[in-house]
Image (cartoon, rainbow, N blue to C red; front, side, top):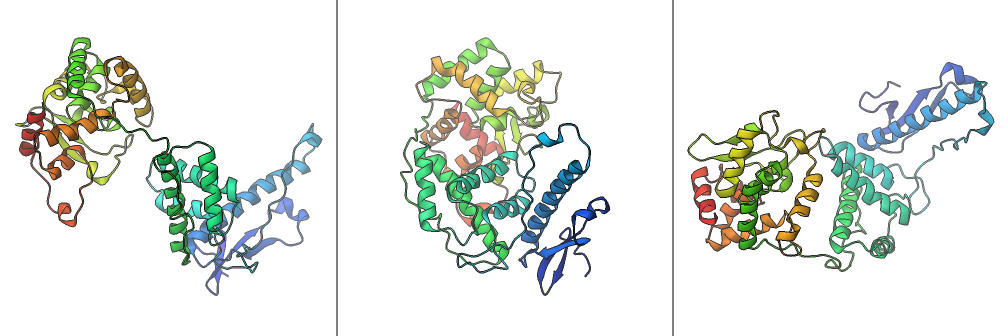
Amino acid sequence: MLENKTVPFSFVKAGVFYFTRRVPRDLDHHYTTGKISFSLRTRSAAVAKSRAQRAAQQLDEHWYHLRIQDVDLPGKHLLRMGAAAEFGSSTSCTGQASVDAVKLSEAVSVYLQLKGQGRPITFHRAAERSCGYVLDVCGDKDIRSYTKADANAFRDELVKRELAGSSITRIFGTVRSVINFAASEAGITLTNPFAGVYYDRSAGVEDREPMPIEAIRSLQSKCQSLDDDLRWLVALVSDTGMRLAEAAGLLKEDFELNGPVPHVVVQEHPWRRLKTSGSNRKVPLVGASLWAAKRLLYENTDSQFAFPRYNKSKTTNANSASAALNKWMKPYVPSRCTMHSFRHSMRDRLRAVECPSDIVDQIGGWQTEGVGHGYGKGYPLEVLSKWLEATA
């Protein structure tokens, strides 16, 4: 059999993938054959690749332990040896071997392998953490073997942990996505038991309050008095409605102040991804945001970043920025108001001047419903600036 080039350590027989790997010569005395070979029990290349890689990793680890056993190592008798990996067939809920059985742990691997390309580490952690909760509560089963009782038990455990309704919604959404995607890749038809599970979605959820205009004006005044990089960041967000991470990850070259409409280009960078495709946009600079842009460009000359203190590693540290700025703002704003409140306020401020909703969406980088909104390049900067000037 010729080795399959798309899936490592494998070959295909009658459409089914098989794992194959030669036993290293220095370990052949542990085996009765020179080659390990078994069915991966799937016709899906993606699933086979995940299983083959995992099998190869388990073999490498086991062979490492075998080599340690063969060495006269001081204290070898104190080593804790792991159990040998078992390579068996996945079984369906009927107990019969299933060629296309996909366990949840394998589903996560396939999901991240295919959909996780170029996605931030938070995407990977969310999938691993959410499905890890399922494994803890319900076990690692074939994705067709989970029942509504499993999903309800999973929900009850999350509620017991006192997670907010919004957090439970995100976790269930991730689990559903992983199972649906893996089922589609493996050609499996199923009714996802993690869909339609009831729980109180409002439990523990606090509404994010918009910032009153009086508080915004007071903060902007304090920013101009203190006049440092932290206050520049607050002022920049206050009159643009940008997400804090968007602003904190800007380069100085993202600002254009010399044209007819001063603006900032919000675009994806390797150190800071954007939330949606619609988040790529140009935002006019007016009022306090224009003041902040001028200050950071004229005063900060040592770095390519607009806010270097939050870009010292491979990713923009928006969490650190949020903690520092929320702490500073707390005495000056109503309770439950945070940096994100500026974004809520910007939407209200644009409503107050009767700005059309699709212009509001373009300014804030919000998704606009409807196919027609995907045509064209959107409103010119002059139009966006007119409405932002009306709020400032």
